[in-house]
Image (cartoon, rainbow, N blue to C red; front, side):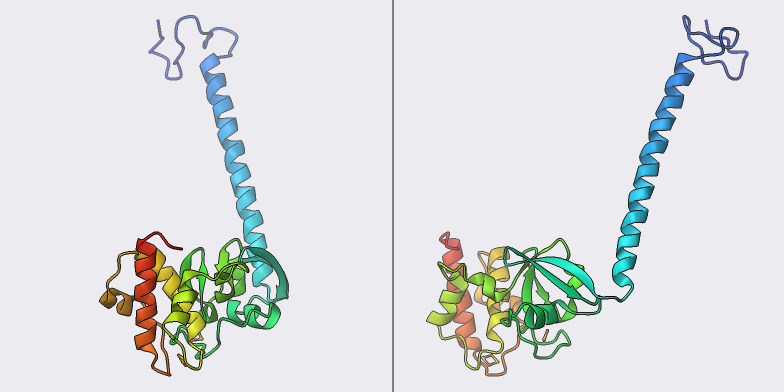
Length: 220
Ligand code: FES
Ligand code: FES
């Protein structure tokens, strides 16, 4: 029987309790559970501090070595934390497909994919891209075959000076993947963030419509 008169008594029959050796199995288990929990928390705190220090090192403003995953290849650059992804691509890695036109997130010429989603490289710091998969327009050419988006742009002559074209191609790639059954109206709206000064919108729309149709048929 439990001695309910004692405030500390949780001793079940067969357990050693307050009048015995002073050692309770339940108390021991509770104690060891607490020790494990404390150890887990301590580890988590240490990891969190280490992570914080890592971030602080990057934010400190000194050139930092970054390993970036670009078009399926690991690329190492040493840049200051304030450097944009667009500058790293164009100036450090000679990947000049993404264009620097407005630099203020208004034209879409610098569009790349980050983890499969469209992003403006002029508005991303390179350090923000650690651990992410970046695809530029150069990545739409496997070396053996051109991506269907590129083929459709060529077929429909969807380019004039070419400055907006890489951004349009990458944005179209992302849009088609996310909206395989899109209508012309949805395509126009979906690609509305990309601007073409030469006004090749008719060819661009035709190219995107064909990409959508090919995606529906199971093309790439
Ligand atoms: S250069 Fe990035 S949006 Fe215009
Ligand atoms: S083709 Fe010249 S800006 Fe679009």
